[in-house]
Image (cartoon, rainbow, N blue to C red; front, side, top):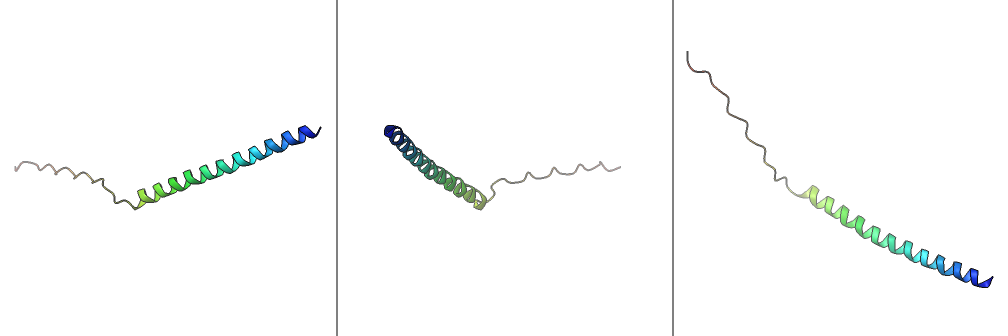
Length: 61
């Protein structure tokens, strides 16, 4: 029965390491996403509005 405890301990250790690694990776991805959103929000708008069409004038009567 002592081996079962050792196997459980190894599994728990691996699970802990995997969760820590996932947290680090998730944090990095989140930081990159937030940084990208901030850069996008601070960038000047480059889309220009199209000019309105000239009004059509009626011919003189």
